[in-house]
Length: 260
Image 1: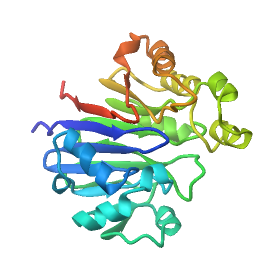
Image 2 (image 1 turned 90 degrees about the vertical axis):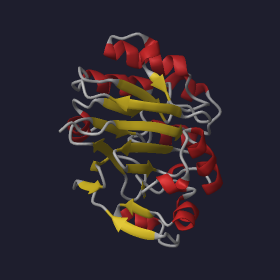
Image 3 (image 1 turned 90 degrees about the horizontal axis):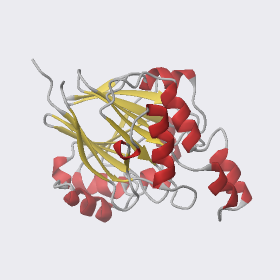
C-alpha cells in the first residue's frame, strides 16, 4: 500500500516567529507556535486551514520565537502539546490544554506521522529538532543549532525534504546592528548556523533524494535571501532558485514529497 503524501507549509520563519505545519493522511501537526494565537489563526487561513484541522502541537524548545502562542492557542482549541521535559520545566508556569512529553532520543508517533527527534547544541533547556516521516518519505527539520554534530548529520542524512537553518552571513553579522554580545551568541556554538555552515553540512550528507530544500530562520538584519540561496545551491550543484526561502512574513506555501 502506498503511503499518503507527506506535505508541509511554513507559517513564518525567523527571529520574530516560527511555525511549521506538516500533514499526512488525516493528521496535521503544528511544529512550534512562535506567533500569537490570533496570528497563528490568520496564517493558517492563508494555507486554507482552521485551528480545528490541527491535531497537536510539537515544540522544539522554549524560546519565544517558537513558543509565543502555545499556551493560549492550545487551550483555545483543546490541543495537546508535545515537548521535552526540559522545555516543559522551562515553561512550567504556562498552562496547556494537555501535556505530552517526548525524549529527544526516542521516536514517537502522532496519528499518521512518525517523529524522530534529536538533540541539538543551542542555548535552551533541552532543545530538539525533528525528522518527520510517513513510513516512505522523510522531512528533516534543522534549525536553532550552533554547530553540527555527527549525530545531527546522521539524523538528516538521505532525507526527501529538508528545512535547514541558514541564519546569517558572517560579514553582515559582523558589520550589522546587533550589540557585540548578541553577535557572539548568534555565531557561537550554541547559536545559529551561518550560510557557510549550512552549505558545508549539505556536502556531508546524502542529498541525492532531496525534492525540496528550504532556507529557514534567516536573519532579516544579518543575511539576504540571495546569499543563502547561492551558498546552498553551490553545495547542491543546483540553480539558486531551486532552493526555497521561508520568509518571516510570508512563510512558504504548501510543498509535497511525492512518492516517486
